[in-house]
Length: 57
Image 1 (cartoon, one colour):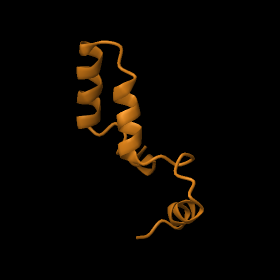
Image 2 (cartoon, rainbow, N blue to C red):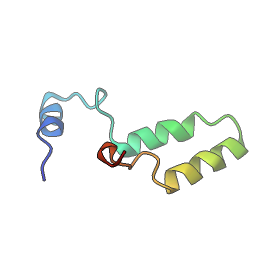
Image 3 (cartoon, one colour):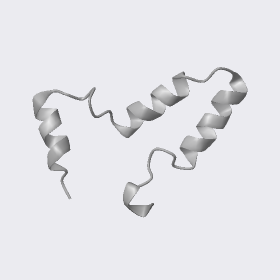
């Protein structure tokens, strides 16, 4: 099902206001402070940290 809000933001060229899941994941990984932190963050992403639906609770 198309998301009208996302379509509107694309037309208005406002991607910074609504970053994609991939952009959120990359920013999260880039904020890692160490190799161990990076590995932990990658595991969280692999488990779907940014892909969970808010409707599921």
